[in-house]
Image 1 (spheres, rainbow, N blue to C red):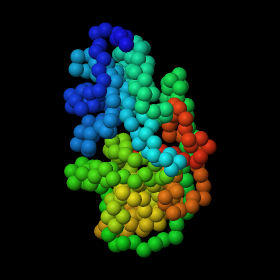
Image 2 (tube, rainbow, N blue to C red):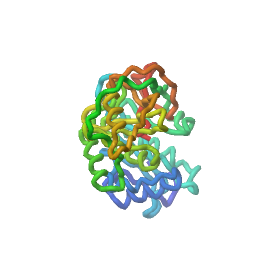
Image 3 (cartoon, rainbow, N blue to C red):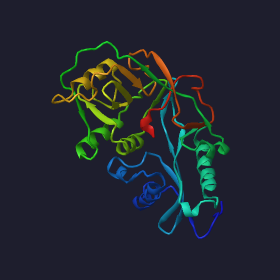
Image 4 (cartoon, rainbow, N blue to C red):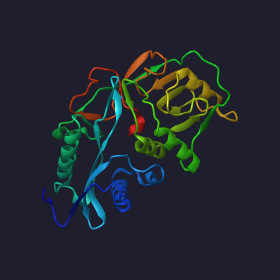
Length: 301
């Protein structure tokens, strides 16, 4: 391909270059008001990421990144590719950079897989590339019957603390899918960024269960957004540990309503309600969950 505008320079495959990663971070921060620079101390970019970008000198002017997103869909291990970090500097828009980079990124994805996914708040931008929205559903109901707590309780992780950050990074190295219907097998950077960008989300370390639960709560309703660990415990066990806390800190309170933002098939809990959601996920290619109540965890951005 030829450059759609001079004197820009096309670059790809620079995920291992710290200076180039910093240039992409500098582009994304004002466009999305998201700072990805902290990922450098939280395990780095997703393994296998392939950025496609136009540079002006050392500055990244436009970027589209593709990366493999291993997951379980309907009981099968698959690796669709995902499109992320799509941005063009405002003063360079309208020159064909976005379309050029999307074409390059999708050509790469199509050589690797027949399924490409992305999350967006502007779906009309991606329909011309063959993407279509998917139906998403969350799950709600009363909590399960209580079970005894271990006594070890829960503690809120602080990603600014190196030991806490290292604990969470290590858990992603042996992550079990949160669901056999729709469960991610990795996704560490996006989980980290979501937690950093939305500090009201608590990352609760449940010592006895060896998992981190991402939760929101108002004291009455507890929203379970994700679980990271080598095995997914029953919901009753998660609630028991959250209700114990450390030093009297009850991270989960005593909720009368539970909302789960992923298929709850591994939680040993039957929801009373299935709620339509729209997180902006789109797919390009065959999607095995058409008509199946499911959704990606909100922690995948």
